[in-house]
Image (tube, rainbow, N blue to C red; front, side, top):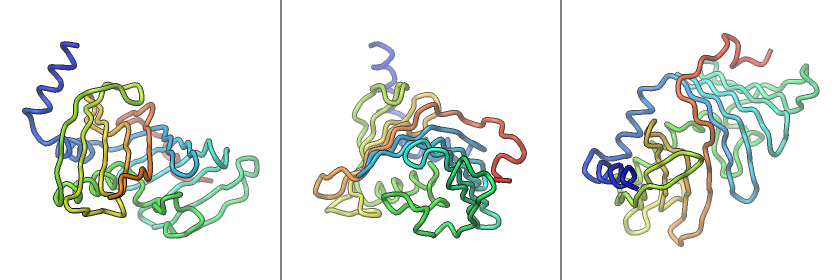
Length: 206
């Protein structure tokens, strides 16, 4: 209890937690996380990221066994839709509807940095409030709410609720709401690992 109160006191008296999260993302070189997203369906994805924007996604639910890799230099996505047919691959644009998320997000804007940029835009046109500390995705986290003023929205979102890990300062859970208070998306980020070592060809589907 004492540790939680001290953490909350630091959060309330310190720098802006969104600025801290943005700085934490700028400082890292790579990360891995297991995403569990709840929209009109459940998506579970092992997600790996490496600057300047390489992405590898290993699908657990739906499309179990599918693999996706994005090369930011070539601006091309390689998709292996069937894990049991390794030779079958598709090369796609990141804008392809085939590989957009249920909320319409593209692969090249799927990382934590892109999320925090949207939150930053909403904060610049709204308010921010630190609500307290609680456990989220197995981490002790500061709960922060960012709300757009007078119904202002970013990509249809008027309110973000973010749980920021006290250790890494990165989000481990996010909820997004529209101006009517309807939940649009709920994402938990389990097993967050900052700056893991990846094999040289990890972001290629050979």
